[in-house]
Each structure stands twice: as C-alpha cells, then as structure tokens.
Image (cartoon, rainbow, N blue to C red; front, side):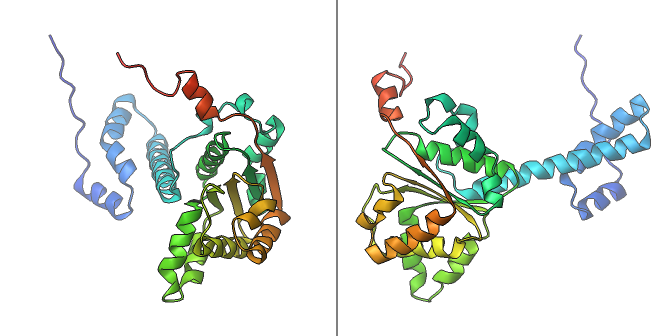
Length: 259
C-alpha cells in the first residue's frame, strides 16, 4: 500500500504578505514545510527563526554568485576542480600564491605568457572563478572586444565612461593577446584600460608574447606606455612546453569514443 505525502499547510496570508514585502523568497518557499516540521518536532521558536534566516542568506548567496558569474562573461566555465597543478609549467608555489587572491587586495596584476595550448586561459579562468566565489566581480575580455568598445563609443566620446564602468570589477581579464593582429582601436582600448586601472584595480592578461614584445603588435609609443603601467606591480608567469590540447588530441583524449 502506497502512502501519499501530505503537503504542509500554506502560510497564513498575512505572514506570506510580510515575507513578500521584506523580499525573502527563499525563506518564504521553505517556511510551510519548516513550520510543519518544527511543530511536529517541538522546536524552540528561535530555532525556527534561525533556520528561516539561514535559508534566506544561503539562497541570496547562491543567486548573487550566479549573477556575478554571468556578468563576468567567462568563456567556458572552467574551475580549479578540473585543473591539474602538476601538468602546468607555472611553478606550484606561484600557483598557490596566486590562488590566495592577496594580490587583488594589493591592486597587483598577473601576466601569463607562453605558447598556445599551455594552459594560460584555463589558469586565468579558474582564478577568475575563484575571485567570483570570494564575493568579488570579474570582467573578461578578448583584445578585439576592447577594440569593438572603443569603436562603438568613440562617436559620442563616451569611451572614458565605459572604461570607468569596467573598473567597477575587482579583476579585469584580457585573454589571448598576440594571437591576432592588433588594430588601432584594440591597442587604444588596451592602453586606456591599463592606464585607468593602474594602482586602482587588478588586471590579468594571457599572451603568446611576453609584454616586452608588445611593440611587435602595436605602435611602440603606445606599447611602451601600456607595458610600463602593466608590469610595474605584476606577477609574470611564463608557460612552456607542448600544447596540452594537441597532446590530448594525439592521445585520443580530445573526443568521446562513438559507440
């Protein structure tokens, strides 16, 4: 014989209205079941209040984390859960020091440079995810994204306001510098962002070139000014070795076998 679970009684209308007015959706959703459990188990009133507040705080934290993740614009969603520290050519002590995130509090920068496929973007995205989980905000860009912003806002002279909005984030990531030719708009955008963030916000970049070689990508005067500000307070990590992606592909680990 099957037993059908009885739904807990609905909240009194006055109590539900108050919880709506106080904007407590997570506690309100839990309240009917919680009150029924509390009544059956004879909880103390303080236990009920505490459980409702814990549910509301936990629910809001989940919601804000999801919002910060969406706003960051991460490319793939990779985290340190799938990162193999031993497979990276970045020294383990350096990885561990960066993962403390203390450098963000000091408004320092991170530069990860090296050949394609050596884990630069993966490492920066995992760092960015950790920053978001710590309650801070991240903004993720490719260099061409900065060029598009400059072009879109040059006509009404609002580039400065756009840069100021970007700097509301605690960490700004610029990914994959050196893969494509840098246009004038992108070079300007990179300089404007680095200059505005100098000693105010942390910037992390991944690049196929060491920043000392940026004058191969953009006008020398602009490159010098950009690199001067970028590297003044920066941790530079150089990756090396073969492409991890290519190695996995050659070993047949890049795809799932078809049945």
